Image (cartoon, rainbow, N blue to C red):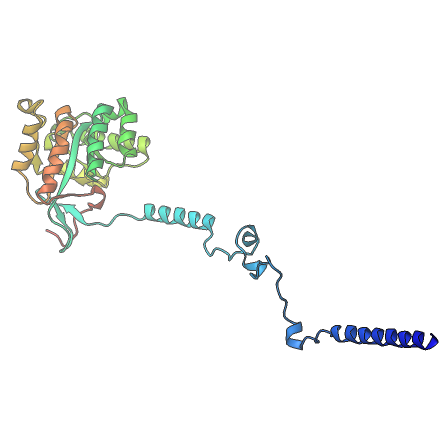
Length: 306
């Protein structure tokens, strides 16, 4: 019996030893990672591999932006300065009025196929003035508005309107009388009183003078020259003032076209039928290759020009 029990104990001990040995073989330790592997992070599932700094969305806005090399406030100020400088620069002296009262270039190479637009005997009515200037603006043209002093005195706001809309003011005497028949003192007053009232109204004196009826003499020429103005009559009359052309814009247009030539100094007036005729007239002139002289580019006759 004791022998049998001893065999069972030995058998049990042997079994336990075998089982213990098997458990040790299964517990194999994990290999130690290499230096390279230990520095590499393996992302877990669902984790982005994109670096945070490269993400789009709100994080991107937090990154410092490059400075804009243009300062908007400085640019606006610079533009304003440039505009003021350009406004102060006097226009080029391209043309003068010759003895026949045509507009002619000061130098070779300047466009000769031009006309000068003028309107006499205002300012009268705002509706007509706006009508004329609206058409001038449409054709990018400027004109001389030769005014009478007594009309300016009655309608200073209309003179200001002409000036504010970018057109040029000329002197047409105070009373629209024949200055050739006046004494030198009277003629001087007719001229200089207009210079004064225009300057008081718009802040500058006229640079151009046209005598009423185109009537003048050497004394009048001298008075005009002393007042730093350019004397002119005209070289192309629209005859819009003639009673036979009243309310006939087509006749006004035809009169101008019949006399058309390079350098035409076109005489018109502040009249309803002239307002009506102007757009078609300017269109016809353009179709024949003519452009419109800016009066600001007209200067005194150069000394070397006959």
